[in-house]
Length: 189
Image (cartoon, rainbow, N blue to C red):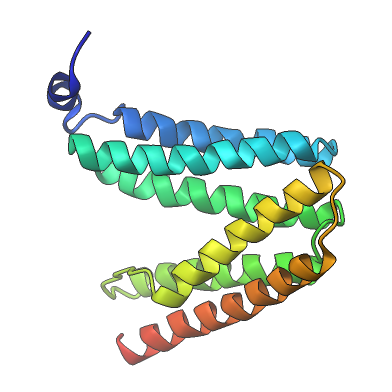
């Protein structure tokens, strides 16, 4: 069985690195998560979401440890994360576990950021995407809200004050994060 250095040598520059395969698996979990929520198997969706979070930590750790992170992984990882989060918000809204307006806000913020990057690229501007602190806070809050919503709904638990507080925290941080990206982009074209 190959040790880490042999795997690193064999996979350097390869598309099929272990971290990329794990990330691709997380991307493939998106339709399954959608189906579980639509079919009201929210406990199963909770465990799938938890597994996706753990896999995200593992693939990042492996890429750093083995030194075989590459451009494919650098693109695929945030796409998988964003696809899962957006799907969670839209689907949890569709089954009335989260408010529609929050799902719209979360998706709209992402569309503004992606749309802005595309417009700048088309205009020939160099596009550098650096996560802002408020964006990291927003992502963390979004993840916690999805996990709490799935946990509560999946196991028939109640925590209405915590849920409402998180909904408003996600809304505020989503607005702040979107505004911060627009501000940074306008100031530094």
